[in-house]
Length: 332
Image (tube, rainbow, N blue to C red; front, top):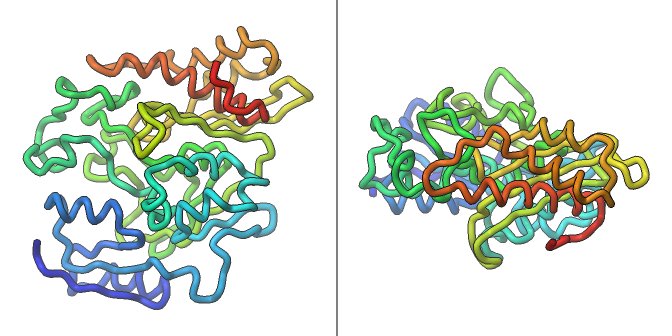
């Protein structure tokens, strides 16, 4: 591992200046550092400067999660544990807390941050292994396309079939989430515009410009929202399929819905077909609810080993909808 400088700026402005410092060729922001440490150990990145921002956003005594007018504000460096245990979120936007409560392990949740979760790199084992020179590292091959792809995308357009690893992103999508940035031409980016498909930029997953950094996230309070993830085991594991739902209800009938899936595409995967199909469906009409949720896989193109995800995704969507409506986990 090469030597690198370590900077601990006192403000986001100072951090942004360090990112643009001409003395550094590859400066990298570090908050919790969970994903970064994996990259350093595998030799996937060799930064010449680490900019530690984990304490920023708290220096002025600001709460990591707070109400801000008609929005909820989450500081970029808020830990996942703080999100999962937040009374504000549990009461006003429960899908966000639910998305994190079983993510990773207690040890990781106590360190990993909100912005870090959104910007973590894909968990594809070919990308993570330094021995494979895949498309995302400048090679000419997506080894997962015809290789071991049981955890990869069922919605894809090439040239890479990663799945986006963030739990927070699908929940923020249905909660009208916005990331607030500094250091570029923009001040905020809707969560739906933060990520791009591999064909639009193979070397990254997000649309942040060079020098831009996330300072905080805002989202809309939604009374009826929920999140559900299906994993191989309930302990530390990556979801096979997950879904977030936000509903407007008229009694026990769905008036409107916002649905987003995760772990099935290179970006958080919006499901407008399901949203349309859910309108007018009664929560007690199980056959209509199942039929609406089955539409989640209409455009799926599973790979050789991951066709099972077309069975799991409608289940995750249905359980997220029921959880949003206050119907509990509903394991049926």
